[in-house]
Length: 491
Ligand SMILES: Cc1ncc(COP(=O)(O)O)c(C=O)c1O
Image: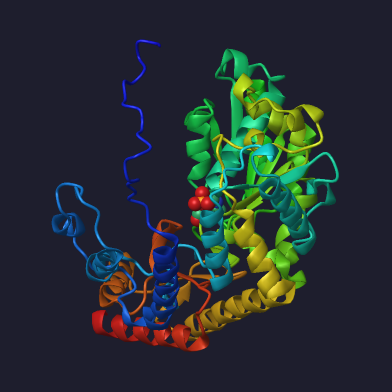
């Protein structure tokens, strides 16, 4: 016996077996109640203030200081969900949620999530649950066709797709693979030399800066390229900056273009950016976190022009494709670069299937080792809606946003602050920043709807982001009425 081993009494076969587990019968009963509760929640969600109105610390003040010594009933827990938790919820699934970008979902997705929890699979290796890996590969191949992505992203070639938790993780993985490719896989061994330089636009998501920090590139070595009047990256400035960096002894290695920037949904000119990237041998990653879903519809595929030249690409079904958070689809043209950058193989993970070379082990395609069975919910969503159903709802959201934009255009008190190519409308009252801030605060405090803001051209701008699964014309009409009446009360 090792000194660190616990000394425990051996179990007696005569003692009655004690268990604190929930019995299957109880689970069956509470599970059905829970599904009912969730269905009821969606039926009453419009009755809640969209933005939670609680004060900081309010929930914690109501919770017991210590964990319960004795287990409690499930009914007691659900009573507390109603009494304590619901007031602290900001209702992302309310049809009156117009903030940030959507994080929408659907009943098939919720059921897929439940099934994933029920199976309790950890799919780090093909061998730890072959279905987890193979369904993921298969569904991601479907999406290559569904979005008309480059055929090189499909698993039948040298590339392939994987589900990441978030677009932030995809950008980080892309950056790491690019870093290793650019340094002949030596940075993993020896660390960064401070010369590598990456590029994106001033409008790129903050996750790029975070990735540059985590990957050891350094945020000072992430160049933010200026944008044009539609907030899209200017490729000629990218080219000039790369040339300057080369002259100064730096090593340009990575560019991230965005299809649908977070602030204003600007579409970077991916084809021109790709031409610059290829000319200099840089890895091009395309971040289409929200707007990638638009490519389901042929008429919106212009947003993806040039993606066929990208080294990697991601979009989030957990934003606009009716799939619960978390679910980001990440594709690479050359999976070998990604796998070589991220793979570490300790003895305890060795197995015959891996050694045969015939399987994918997704642990090598991501940062963590462990992974959930996320493909189930995506599979359920795609099978439930079909491509036709997904397109229908995406088109509806775009139509609603275009309708909203037309109302803003027609009202002389307001102005559009940026082009609205899809489902985000950036607008502001002409009375200036302070009035817009007050307008947004009053609307959000009312609980009737929830809007968030950004700054465009230095001016405070409101964002009407339409993508919640249940949002209909009546919600958007009412939002516009509320915006106009609050504005009239302020100005
Ligand atoms: C363009 C873009 N990229 C990345 C992200 C980050 O998404 P995630 O939360 O999946 O990391 C967002 C979030 O809104 C985004 O709009």
